[in-house]
Amino acid sequence: MPMTRQRTDWFQAIKDIRAQHGCDILAAERIALSDPDWRRWVDAQINRDPDCRKMARRHMKSRGPASLIVVADGRLKIGDAI
Image (cartoon, rainbow, N blue to C red; front, side, top):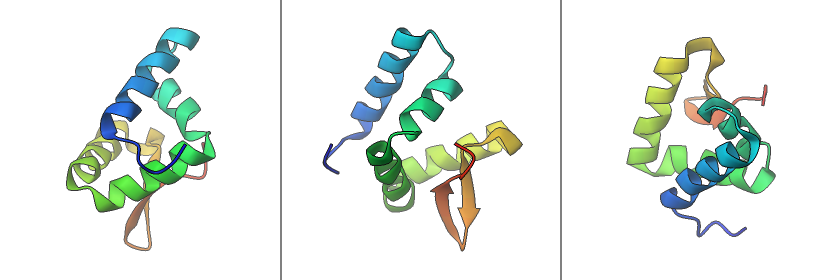
């Protein structure tokens, strides 16, 4: 899917994955981020969009070591453990 996705598309994708797989939010995010297109989109958004960056930092703080996002070379990125 092209990079013209909107933040609402991400939220809807997570809702759809949760409904389809009967999983929690973190598991749904892992599933979504296993898709290369979503992964690239999220990587770009968490560094470009201030609101997305803020959500990413909250995710890191609340999830601690289980966070899907890491800081590498001063940039936020999706961790390799997904």
